[in-house]
Amino acid sequence: MFKVIKESLGIKKKRTKKIIYLLKKEYPDAKCSLNFRNPLELMIATILSAQCTDVRVNIVTQSLFKKYRKAEDCANVSQKELEEDIKSTGFFRNKTKSIRLACQKMVEKFNGKVPRTMEDLLYLNGIGRKTANVILGNAYGIPSGIAVDTHVTRISKRLGLSYSKTAEKIEQDLMQLVPKSDWILFPHLIIFHGRKICQARNPKCEKCVLNKICPSSLV
Image (cartoon, rainbow, N blue to C red; front, side, top):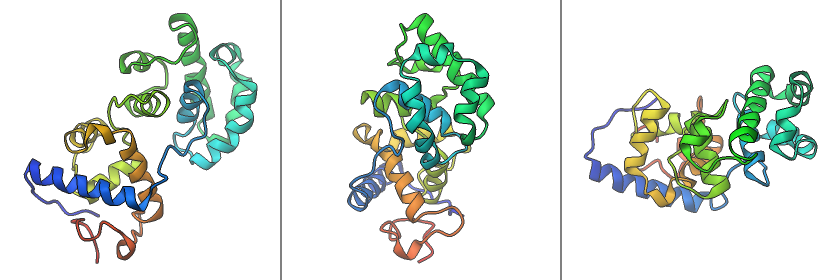
Protein backbone atom coordinates (compact mmCIF):
# COMPACT_ATOMS: atom_id res chain seq x y z
CA MET A 1 0.00 0.00 0.00
CA PHE A 2 1.68 3.18 -1.22
CA LYS A 3 0.93 6.10 -3.48
CA VAL A 4 3.39 7.22 -6.12
CA ILE A 5 4.09 10.95 -5.93
CA LYS A 6 6.35 13.11 -8.08
CA GLU A 7 8.62 15.58 -6.32
CA SER A 8 11.79 17.41 -7.20
CA LEU A 9 14.93 16.14 -5.48
CA GLY A 10 15.14 19.35 -3.44
CA ILE A 11 11.59 19.03 -2.08
CA LYS A 12 12.08 15.34 -1.36
CA LYS A 13 15.29 16.12 0.56
CA LYS A 14 13.47 18.68 2.71
CA ARG A 15 10.68 16.21 3.44
CA THR A 16 13.22 13.52 4.31
CA LYS A 17 14.88 15.83 6.83
CA LYS A 18 11.47 16.51 8.38
CA ILE A 19 10.79 12.76 8.57
CA ILE A 20 14.11 12.16 10.31
CA TYR A 21 13.51 15.05 12.73
CA LEU A 22 10.09 13.72 13.73
CA LEU A 23 11.30 10.13 14.10
CA LYS A 24 14.24 11.23 16.26
CA LYS A 25 11.80 12.96 18.60
CA GLU A 26 9.51 9.91 18.61
CA TYR A 27 12.28 7.32 19.10
CA PRO A 28 15.16 8.98 20.98
CA ASP A 29 16.52 5.58 22.00
CA ALA A 30 16.54 4.05 18.51
CA LYS A 31 19.58 1.85 18.01
CA CYS A 32 20.63 -1.59 16.80
CA SER A 33 18.36 -4.17 18.44
CA LEU A 34 20.97 -6.94 18.33
CA ASN A 35 23.07 -7.44 21.45
CA PHE A 36 26.83 -7.41 20.82
CA ARG A 37 30.07 -6.36 22.47
CA ASN A 38 32.43 -6.36 19.51
CA PRO A 39 32.44 -6.49 15.68
CA LEU A 40 32.64 -10.30 15.55
CA GLU A 41 29.54 -10.70 17.71
CA LEU A 42 27.65 -8.19 15.59
CA MET A 43 28.67 -9.99 12.40
CA ILE A 44 27.46 -13.33 13.73
CA ALA A 45 24.24 -11.86 15.15
CA THR A 46 23.45 -10.12 11.86
CA ILE A 47 23.93 -13.34 9.89
CA LEU A 48 21.65 -15.13 12.36
CA SER A 49 18.99 -12.42 12.07
CA ALA A 50 18.09 -13.36 8.49
CA GLN A 51 14.47 -14.62 8.53
CA CYS A 52 14.56 -14.51 12.34
CA THR A 53 13.51 -11.98 14.97
CA ASP A 54 16.14 -9.98 16.82
CA VAL A 55 14.55 -11.16 20.07
CA ARG A 56 15.22 -14.80 19.17
CA VAL A 57 18.75 -14.00 18.00
CA ASN A 58 19.53 -12.26 21.30
CA ILE A 59 18.32 -15.31 23.23
CA VAL A 60 20.55 -17.61 21.18
CA THR A 61 23.63 -15.40 21.29
CA GLN A 62 23.47 -15.03 25.06
CA SER A 63 25.05 -18.47 25.42
CA LEU A 64 26.62 -18.61 21.94
CA PHE A 65 28.99 -15.70 22.61
CA LYS A 66 30.22 -17.34 25.81
CA LYS A 67 31.25 -20.39 23.80
CA TYR A 68 32.64 -18.66 20.70
CA ARG A 69 34.78 -15.67 21.64
CA LYS A 70 37.17 -15.43 18.67
CA ALA A 71 36.99 -15.96 14.93
CA GLU A 72 39.22 -19.00 15.39
CA ASP A 73 36.56 -20.62 17.59
CA CYS A 74 33.96 -20.41 14.83
CA ALA A 75 36.48 -21.33 12.13
CA ASN A 76 37.43 -24.56 13.87
CA VAL A 77 34.09 -25.79 15.18
CA SER A 78 32.38 -28.59 13.25
CA GLN A 79 29.39 -27.88 11.04
CA LYS A 80 27.21 -30.20 13.11
CA GLU A 81 28.10 -28.65 16.48
CA LEU A 82 27.48 -25.06 15.40
CA GLU A 83 24.23 -26.10 13.71
CA GLU A 84 22.97 -27.39 17.03
CA ASP A 85 23.97 -24.18 18.78
CA ILE A 86 22.03 -21.91 16.39
CA LYS A 87 19.25 -24.27 15.29
CA SER A 88 16.36 -22.22 16.70
CA THR A 89 17.18 -19.22 14.47
CA GLY A 90 16.05 -21.12 11.36
CA PHE A 91 17.93 -21.81 8.12
CA PHE A 92 20.65 -23.01 10.47
CA ARG A 93 22.61 -25.09 7.95
CA ASN A 94 23.26 -22.18 5.61
CA LYS A 95 23.89 -19.80 8.50
CA THR A 96 26.38 -22.21 10.04
CA LYS A 97 28.21 -22.59 6.74
CA SER A 98 28.37 -18.80 6.28
CA ILE A 99 29.67 -18.16 9.81
CA ARG A 100 32.31 -20.90 9.61
CA LEU A 101 33.59 -19.93 6.17
CA ALA A 102 33.54 -16.19 6.96
CA CYS A 103 35.58 -16.78 10.11
CA GLN A 104 37.99 -19.06 8.27
CA LYS A 105 38.62 -16.31 5.71
CA MET A 106 39.04 -13.78 8.52
CA VAL A 107 41.67 -15.98 10.16
CA GLU A 108 43.48 -16.58 6.86
CA LYS A 109 43.41 -13.04 5.46
CA PHE A 110 42.54 -10.56 8.22
CA ASN A 111 44.35 -11.92 11.27
CA GLY A 112 41.06 -13.05 12.79
CA LYS A 113 39.59 -9.53 12.76
CA VAL A 114 36.35 -8.32 11.19
CA PRO A 115 37.36 -6.09 8.23
CA ARG A 116 36.69 -2.35 8.29
CA THR A 117 35.94 -1.81 4.59
CA MET A 118 32.96 -2.66 2.42
CA GLU A 119 35.13 -4.45 -0.15
CA ASP A 120 36.75 -6.72 2.44
CA LEU A 121 33.47 -7.49 4.20
CA LEU A 122 31.82 -8.49 0.93
CA TYR A 123 34.66 -10.98 0.45
CA LEU A 124 33.35 -12.92 3.45
CA ASN A 125 30.68 -15.61 3.14
CA GLY A 126 27.17 -14.61 4.18
CA ILE A 127 27.92 -10.88 4.04
CA GLY A 128 25.94 -8.68 1.64
CA ARG A 129 25.71 -4.90 1.53
CA LYS A 130 23.04 -4.75 4.24
CA THR A 131 25.06 -6.80 6.70
CA ALA A 132 28.24 -4.92 5.82
CA ASN A 133 26.51 -1.57 6.41
CA VAL A 134 25.23 -2.81 9.78
CA ILE A 135 28.72 -3.90 10.84
CA LEU A 136 30.57 -0.82 9.60
CA GLY A 137 28.00 1.57 11.03
CA ASN A 138 27.25 0.00 14.39
CA ALA A 139 30.56 -1.65 15.25
CA TYR A 140 32.97 0.87 13.74
CA GLY A 141 30.91 4.06 13.38
CA ILE A 142 31.65 4.19 9.64
CA PRO A 143 28.73 5.51 7.49
CA SER A 144 29.39 3.34 4.45
CA GLY A 145 25.78 3.36 3.25
CA ILE A 146 22.24 2.71 4.49
CA ALA A 147 21.22 -0.76 5.62
CA VAL A 148 18.03 -1.76 3.78
CA ASP A 149 15.87 -4.46 5.35
CA THR A 150 12.19 -5.30 4.90
CA HIS A 151 11.05 -2.41 7.14
CA VAL A 152 13.18 0.13 5.26
CA THR A 153 12.00 -1.25 1.92
CA ARG A 154 8.31 -1.10 2.86
CA ILE A 155 8.32 2.25 4.63
CA SER A 156 10.54 4.01 2.08
CA LYS A 157 7.86 3.23 -0.53
CA ARG A 158 5.01 4.33 1.71
CA LEU A 159 6.81 7.59 2.42
CA GLY A 160 7.54 8.15 -1.25
CA LEU A 161 11.31 8.13 -0.75
CA SER A 162 12.05 5.24 -3.12
CA TYR A 163 9.95 3.13 -5.44
CA SER A 164 12.86 0.95 -6.54
CA LYS A 165 12.51 -2.83 -6.43
CA THR A 166 15.94 -3.93 -5.23
CA ALA A 167 17.63 -3.24 -1.91
CA GLU A 168 20.72 -1.94 -3.71
CA LYS A 169 18.74 0.63 -5.70
CA ILE A 170 16.65 1.65 -2.68
CA GLU A 171 19.89 2.25 -0.78
CA GLN A 172 21.20 4.46 -3.60
CA ASP A 173 17.94 6.44 -3.63
CA LEU A 174 18.03 6.96 0.13
CA MET A 175 21.70 7.99 0.13
CA GLN A 176 20.72 10.92 -2.08
CA LEU A 177 18.08 12.05 0.42
CA VAL A 178 19.36 11.20 3.90
CA PRO A 179 22.23 13.35 5.24
CA LYS A 180 25.37 11.24 5.61
CA SER A 181 25.45 12.05 9.32
CA ASP A 182 22.19 10.07 9.66
CA TRP A 183 23.04 7.07 7.45
CA ILE A 184 23.74 4.83 10.45
CA LEU A 185 20.76 5.92 12.54
CA PHE A 186 18.17 6.16 9.75
CA PRO A 187 17.48 2.40 9.42
CA HIS A 188 17.02 2.08 13.20
CA LEU A 189 14.50 4.93 13.24
CA ILE A 190 12.59 3.27 10.39
CA ILE A 191 12.74 -0.18 12.01
CA PHE A 192 11.44 1.15 15.35
CA HIS A 193 8.65 2.95 13.49
CA GLY A 194 7.85 -0.13 11.41
CA ARG A 195 7.52 -2.35 14.45
CA LYS A 196 5.41 0.08 16.48
CA ILE A 197 3.31 2.01 13.95
CA CYS A 198 3.93 1.43 10.23
CA GLN A 199 3.31 -2.29 10.26
CA ALA A 200 2.99 -4.32 7.08
CA ARG A 201 -0.68 -5.29 7.26
CA ASN A 202 -2.33 -2.78 9.54
CA PRO A 203 -0.42 0.50 9.72
CA LYS A 204 -1.63 2.73 12.57
CA CYS A 205 -1.79 5.91 10.50
CA GLU A 206 -4.01 7.66 13.04
CA LYS A 207 -1.19 7.40 15.62
CA CYS A 208 1.66 8.18 13.24
CA VAL A 209 3.76 11.32 13.70
CA LEU A 210 4.38 11.32 9.95
CA ASN A 211 0.76 11.17 8.78
CA LYS A 212 0.72 14.83 7.64
CA ILE A 213 3.72 14.39 5.37
CA CYS A 214 3.19 10.76 4.30
CA PRO A 215 1.60 10.32 0.85
CA SER A 216 0.20 6.92 1.91
CA SER A 217 -1.45 8.09 5.12
CA LEU A 218 -5.00 6.83 5.66
CA VAL A 219 -5.86 9.72 7.96
